[in-house]
Amino acid sequence: MTTATLTGSTAQRRNPGALSGLLYVLFFVASLVVAGVLGSSSVVTPYSSDAAVQAYRLEDPATLENLFRVLGLLQGLSALSLLAFVPCLTGFVRRYGSETRAGVVRALATVAGALLMLSASTSWILAQIGSKAELSTYRAVSDLSFITGAGPAIATLGAAVFLVATTGRTSRAMPAWVAYSGMVIGAAGVLSMSSLLAEGGSVFIPIGRFLGFIWFIAVSVLLWRRGEPKESLEGVHVAAGHGGTVGGADRLEVLGDAGQAAGA
Image (cartoon, rainbow, N blue to C red):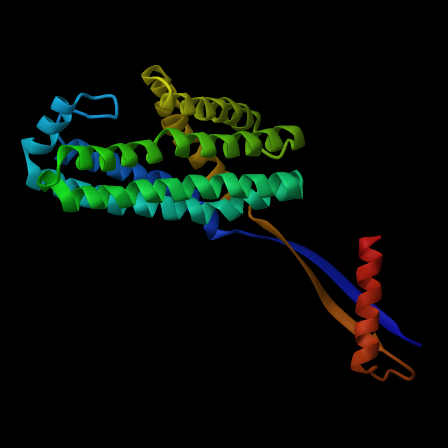
């Protein structure tokens, strides 16, 4: 005669990796604060004239080079934090949505993190060439840094945010305000891609980025507080005959039967 005593338990294990979404925001905001303190009062974009770009880079070359180095570091850390947060977003969508949608979210968020890392890397290149490079070379690198960190990065991340938010809405796995705001922010982020066609499209960039920061903080804290379900099977006792203990093969058989029963 074989008997088995099985005790199932479910525990919530908090995942510290979920806080990487918070770090993504903090590192990027820190770069903006540093830019406000060390940077010039003027701002140049791909739509600025050559004269404005030349005046900007020659105003205080040493300070500007140091600024680009710090920006490269902080925004690079922000990109790494975003990439570390991708598995959390993917896991959420896989759990409450589908494997296919989770794969799409993984691809989009990873591309967004890679673009942000590219933007941070080009900031370091700008620090190296500084005022010594030809204006056309400086401008090409500067425009690449701006574009990769703006429209394309925000658009791909916005698409991922939209998919995560719609998954949370349909499954009711996240608060309604987080789900609906994520859908709006995600749509605005996707529309920021229009900045590649016209300067007017740049209006969607701060919406997708700064409101997106608030959304990422909320989701990061939400996922961290919720934790991950951890199923465990404890208190397994197997006996045979006159109270004897069965061998390893019989024990595995009993555990396998228990797993099949739980699956049924």
